[in-house]
Length: 594
Image 1 (cartoon, rainbow, N blue to C red):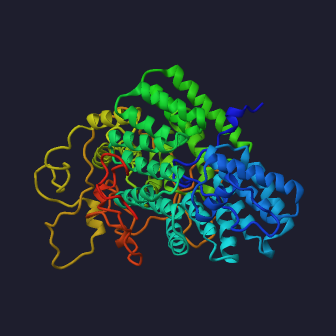
Image 2 (cartoon, rainbow, N blue to C red):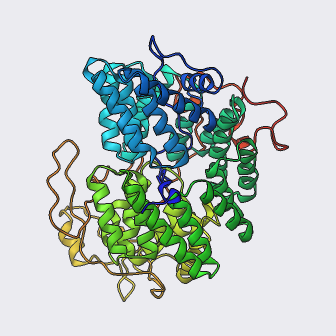
């Protein structure tokens, strides 16, 4: 039997597609008959019109008001659509998957009264938002695109499309939808998505400036808390746990119900060695909203402290939460696969992620998780094709760099392995209480690179004279004036240390996925994963040679440089100052924004 606690278990992605703040995707009007009650309902309606997140009490008042109305007016398609969208919003905000069947019922009742082909765009948008909340991003894309065709200037449809494209890993399409959204609307629903996209593309300074701007301009405590949470995540990702604690604390001052900020502060406290406080904050987050990823993070903190029994309890709790949410149509296989890869059955993790990949869920988060699961399943060679899509958007992730370094180490590609493990610790030295120490151990096992470069760098033979091996001789075209003494490029591979804890199995190889634009054949019954699309040409945007840093070259670009058609945001300030909390002692003297 389901318990009330376990039912509140719809994971929002850590993983990049569901945003920090929900935006109520309500119909812009209320029809000719319904008359909203004053007070809380009116505030929720006003918030919906501007894209500002309503407070949870106001949202609940709106739901109660519409429930009463449709019970007496069952043919009011608009009120059914409003009610369904409000259920989606509450389910997303509280991670309460029980709200989603209610939302589906209300939205379908709206379409029964007025079909989509007759202009019921609001119900279509609500269903698209529901699909995104359940992590069915392909359905969200289809419904969102249909709504855009009906009402191209309805900003809510473009907002849902951004979430769908992000979940599918289609970053170009997400960027195009963001450009359209920015022309149609402004406010938190735009700034939030801009921040997320800049972050995922590795432009952390621009993302931080936008989050700072959103916090300074927030009209409600809930909106301010959401913006400060995003800022806190950015500060944490760049390896500043003390500043992250201050920023998450400011978010909690604005809205103590910000469960994500409780978990974010717990993560930062653990990095500072304040583990008792970290455990307390994780438990508070789980008591408010039991998200599976909170249980995973708390379990890994317990494991790092040597409390294996407590860790196992959290891992089992995660499994129950995921299973329970699945009954309401929520796909949490990504977080469950992360658990299986590191603390359970890696082969099962590969199976789940194969299904995600084949369904079109090809975000950087799924690609990284697939590569890591294959590595943990002693199949590191098969992990290689997934490293490129994991790094392609450009996001600087310490966890991703750690995963890549360990995979390269297993393949005895020691130079790139050393660089990526160093990169992980440079981005955030304490990115995980469990895995950051393992990154340091792996680096120590690798040791320093050999002096003078690889032994075969110049192709010297035993007598010290340059020669070409037989393969090189056969591959060269004969030339009358051939420079026989010109060396060929070596492999660059260094002689490696002992195997340490890296796994070195190379069972099987990944196949070749169809080229873009060609139908994808039905997957063969094989244990090999479906690989990513064919590699981009060397030097193309978003790619990197094996072992090179994924950080963009040169100084960070500003938001104005990325979107030159947009005027500069007033008060955004220098990117380097974006880490300060608006309104705190570290804030600039002049307030941000107007």
